[in-house]
Length: 318
Ligand SMILES: [Zn+2]
Image (spheres, protein in one colour):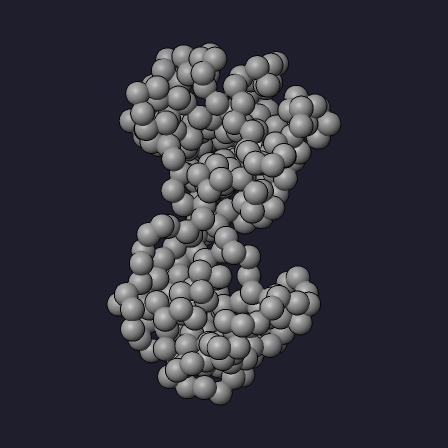
């Protein structure tokens, strides 16, 4: 059994920026960076971002000129904006995300000649991995701002603070402060000798099969979450739960925590509310199978695919 190689990390991790938490509350520094022609702005429109096509597609990391007239929308509260971080070199170029979903699609795209709005599941397959990580970070943070305009404690309006990394309630009697939320889910490659347990959900693309996954509940450890989800969805008991790796999953706001687990029982009894079916798939068959509308694995960029790839190649966490 070969040892798992933990590097490189999963796609969407490895944001190539220093998050500079210590500068987020420095309003004069933030203002100077917003005015700085070197600063970069990642536009988000309804969770999509802009990609320039061509032989080597790139994410749009434009300067403030592309946003002429729209930074005022941010100042007036219509356009969420957040500092993502600065490049970890002497130039320390600030990178901001700005959500332009309040504008018509044509107005946004017309500022980016040769660019197209694209969902992250598509752009991740085109742009360099560090840029995909920046787009994922921007998308996740902007989604949180768009969904949290009102205080969850009292219902009054909330406003962004700390360069877009928290929101404060405007009701002085309440004063609640809210932080970006990430929902934890486990995703598990269950193995039994040369077989792996894969499932299918009816709403997935044709032929798509994947590992089982589910959200963590309050009062539950990750290991308990693994055992519960696998049993609830497939009727299979597991043992020897081993952590593999994790992946930010901004669809819309999760982190996928990846595990491998040994099956302690083999009989499958699916929860038909959750799954269309589940089945055991042989390692050699999985290694050789060609993707088709009858069977395909999850996207190359997903942790589900990495779990499968590592298991097929005999890489196990120790
Ligand atoms: Zn409140």
